[in-house]
Image 1 (cartoon, one colour):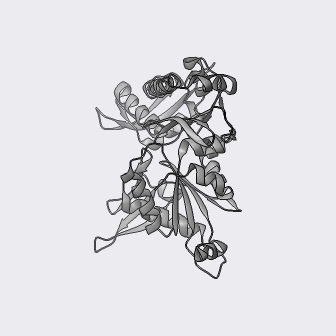
Image 2: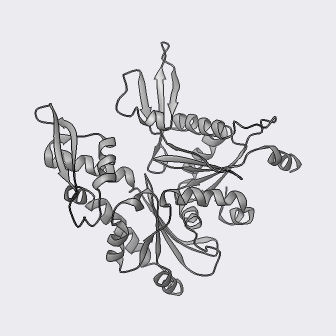
Image 3: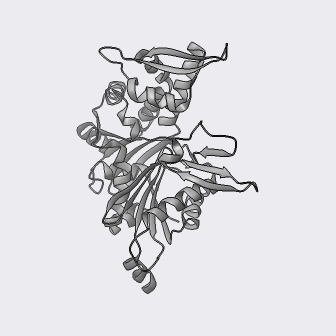
Length: 347
């Protein structure tokens, strides 16, 4: 106990939003110090050993463009670690970057990591083991719906129902919080990555054009919509014709992307309806009065708040800085030990 307190003086406590698409690191007293894509580039040396070549933004720029001896890998898939070794290297890189401080004492940091709701014990252990192997002194896990609610500024400690929908890169987390706890929550493997893959599939099936996931993400950002635009938008994309095998340029419009996203948006709507049907009567009026907060990168899809609101007949609004809600909520735990104790996932 004495040593823990001593370590706390010299170590830099960190909060990590270990996302499928991006990893955000917050340092106590400093705010966000790292916001990078969750990608690692590995190079094979002449002995067949894999060495880390790049992590984050630089590695993401290599996706789909590497020679045989280099691989750009996303170690997180659908909110969980898909490649333990690569995830460990990525976390180690970010922890080292975050703690490359002026302190004379190189004390390992205490780390709070946000994870999707409903992870199995094995999946939780994988996250903890990766972080500890990467240099963390202590690892505390909290669940995304709680972090998203805190980051959105919802009064989760009050005896009233507050609801949040967090659409990240790998999962959609839906939770109802009250008195610092989750009353109801659900996690589904639908998020920004699924949006991208469905766009890739739609373009291939309808136009016989094979495009990359980076292109699909760019299209989603520029002309993607859940409800359409008053004036349809168009964009030119380049891919490979799957019949002729030749490179081809094609113009698509926002109607195409709306159709491509139809299925994943329906899955989110179905899950939202299911959890709304389970709300205790005492909290139902709170949800109607307070509305539902929409967070995560998926919240930036044009018209998604209106789309979901029309489907469930309830007010839904996009919070400020939805991309950072989970990270801010996780970071808030660094300054509030009492709240952290209440919301931390038990070992």
